[in-house]
Image (cartoon, rainbow, N blue to C red):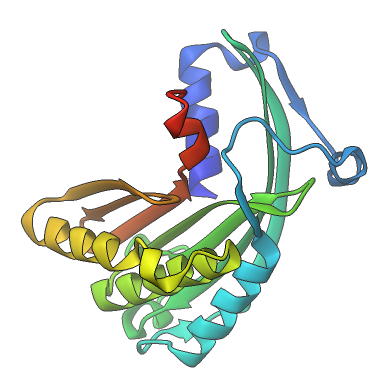
Length: 217
């Protein structure tokens, strides 16, 4: 939800909302059209399957968190930019976790900290867009990240000997120990990890190796 709000607010800053091209679409029409959105790079994997597997892993490895019922929501829209129209067909499975302190608080309380693991995939095709998490346990954060990376590499049939994961995880651990923000691009992954007050936040998107090799952005 934060990401969607951020994209709205940053776009509004660039152009007055009422003067900009913005179209909200119904989930059914996006599914019927079956065309992937243009606003995200797409992992060639089934996002729902990855999300379901992550949910099972979180349930089995809760690191002291209480796992709330999953929340699935969709947001499908098109934006007009200087370079033309961009489409965002997002379906998000969110897993929300509460630690002992938060479980004593109401979600309206200022001190309440939303902690989550979210997987975003294309409403039209089901292909995965990205993975995001915000947790106050670095141990849980990195364990969940590593499992997500393994699920994704397995889904695209990357052999274990060619895995980017050991190098990625070492880079993230080392980076977080030394600085607040870490950006790593390796294999099929673009990973950003950073500390934000008491939270460790992670975002993973697709690095299209073939496109990168052609010298395209």
